[in-house]
Amino acid sequence: MMASAAALICLLIAAVGCLYLVFAAVLAANFARRAPLEPAWSPAVTILKPLNGDEPALFENLSSFCAQTYSAPVQLVLGVHDEKDDAIPVVQHLRASFPGQDAGLVIDRAVHGTNLKISNLINMMPAARHECIVLADSDICVPADYLSRVIAALDQPGVGGVTCLYHGVPVAGFWSRLSALAIDGHFLANVLVGLRLGLARPCFGSTIALRRSHLDEIGGFEAFSNCLADDYAIGAALRRKGLGVAIPPFLVGHSCHEASLSELWRHELRWARTIRTADPAGYAGSLVTHPLAFALLACVAGTPAIGSALAILAILCRIVLLQVTTHSHGLAAPPYWLIPIRDLFSFVVFLWSFCGRDLTWRGRSYHVRANGTLTTDEGAKPS
Image (cartoon, rainbow, N blue to C red; front, side, top):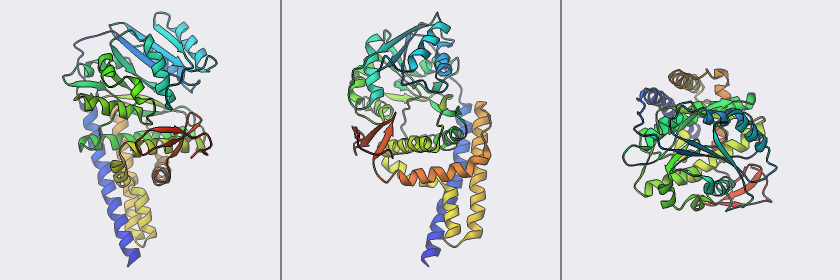
């Protein structure tokens, strides 16, 4: 009886998960069909790019911000903590390749809190000259009309910030392909469904655009110096001021450069525990986004025929979701044969993310408090 009850529960979750993927595919198509906003103004913009090391595709990513078809002045501020940082030669190459680009480099060892990315941004802010601030992570690549579309969204009534959804761009072989597949086949679906059902209020490091005056109102970057999910916290702070966070209908690229299984595991575990910390109830409910795993568990629990059928259906639904996403946004087709591996790996990460609060980030060990703040834990082993 216990095996039968367990099998029925697994079958139910798997079936709901398949419906979830179909719903996500419909939302993905609708998102891509939304008409872009036309910019009514073109203010001068400062783009902040905190850097740490010479990541794969760093030059290409930074170059995309220098190749904008934007009619107003654009200041690019790049920042590192160490004068020996491997990103500095890349910045020098960038400045030589785009001599007309206003690009400055800030090197400052000062540390403010435990979040080193936010610490870097605090050091960079005195160099920012313009009212409109756009923050984007170093692993982001953008289209030429990126600034125009982001600023058009920022100009809408009641909007205090703009963020962007993103797709995965593998740049380091097999493991980076698995990482990109997680973004395209899992992350995007979860965000779109969460937005549609009113369960998600995201803000991503892929892009955070806001006015300097609004940044000052929420306490500046200093207010987030110990936060793990600093991007989410910035969005939440804007909303507490009665300001919306807009998401324009296009994707930016996120470079996935995991070169090993251990690197992929550490990155995705940090990502999962970040989401779990920011939205614990929603994260727990995301178990329905793993239909393949529950279909296979149903097979083990005593319903192999129905479980196998649902497992095949779950893979097909994931393929449909990916096809809709890639076709709608003109992306390259993903390696569909990796879908079963990717889905089961995501399920293992999901389960393990509940087993502790330790993580590694940029080679340093941290412990995440229940309130989402970070403490350094130099003696902790990487999770």
